[in-house]
Image (cartoon, rainbow, N blue to C red; front, side, top):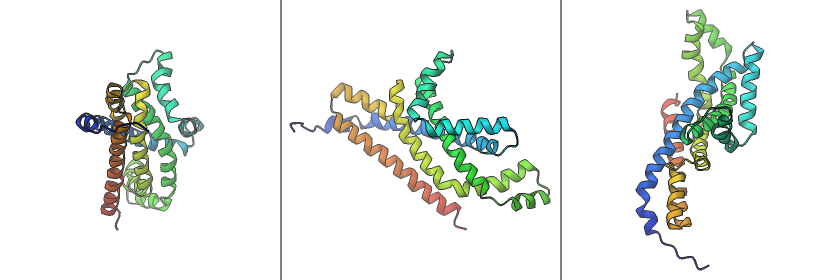
Length: 220
């Protein structure tokens, strides 16, 4: 080994990498918000009495869970272009990760919905609540209590999946910024080692914050 480490250029570029980390967080948070929204709808559709809704939900879940996340991002960026729908790198990455999140979370939410006893819904209806009100005030809070920790794991997975944006030309997230800095300086180990530490710290911050939230919200 005759490689000489030079950490100073990497540390000087740390502010740029931290700005890239903010873009990474932006994509991850948006994909989780959208993913949770679609996952709830898919979980409800999977239990619907309408066969078309069940088939749609099943197809989404099967595709999301049994194909690589990279292919899903490719389909959003390249595949939709074949149909005349052109997305830039950021929305394509967001669409791909959202699709993946929704597919995985739909199964998690479906299990969470089944964990809520039907008697509680009937009790809420007997108190005068409508179906939507009972679902919003009785079912959803209990479901999210059950799925909270899997939801946290999916958030960490979404953060790590944002690194795939570099393959569709996204160059302002953490991985994209790191790759650009590497191309300019050829200090691969130094830049990617710091980027790995930043990803690690973000993931640990998310899991630590989730544990604190769980302690505050679910101690009773």
